[in-house]
Image (cartoon, rainbow, N blue to C red; front, side, top):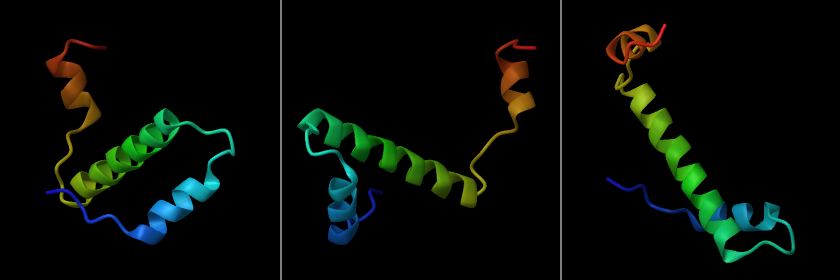
Length: 61
């Protein structure tokens, strides 16, 4: 379920960007933030896998 956007957080994100930032830059920053927040939520809910388990699954040493 998508999280509700907080207007203040959106303003802060935009304020931190350089004056010559593009719409693509903004979309990228939003994507990165959303991805990090989803990862943190998964981690807090125990929805992660051990690195060694993943390496074994994919045959990586």
